[in-house]
Length: 211
Image (cartoon, rainbow, N blue to C red; front, side):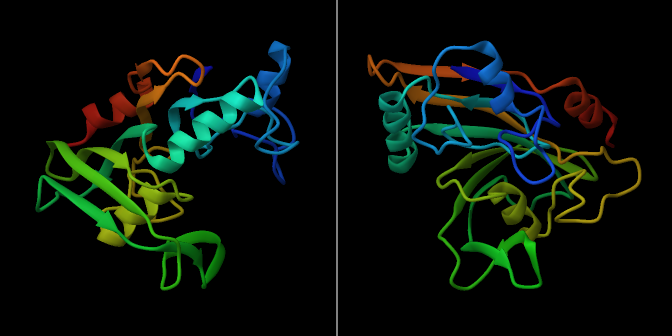
């Protein structure tokens, strides 16, 4: 199943989030869900941050889960995001590489650190404005907070991202990041499938408002 997750919804139960998660919504639909991701994460193949909107794929059974996980590993399951970053980019496209691990100064955050796990984000400028840039970002890896960390390390944190860059006046209450497109092979038929969903109203309204 491919779901358009709203911003503000946590994917699976965690400390401080014991109800109202995507997992609870899946269980409320009934039927079986994969257990390959662990007992606390039925159906969950990959994650989106709480503040990120957009597409996420979940699995009904373990064979589908394993097939989708394999696609994530070999990068045939592709995820493309739209992001609003602060500032103007000097180049219209590029690859951001930086090993990601726990921030030694704050274990709740991630950072580009020596000894972290390899991570690569490919970006392309969609539109520039004087204070912000609209980007398309493709993940070659899937590290925690990857796009947010890479853009912050570049000096262009996401608008609204208080965790990786102080939230500016008038900025939204969540990072401006949207999982826009998902490409995968159907885990049973192997047919290639593409899903796209437009950004939500808060994302488009903020981009329309920036100068």
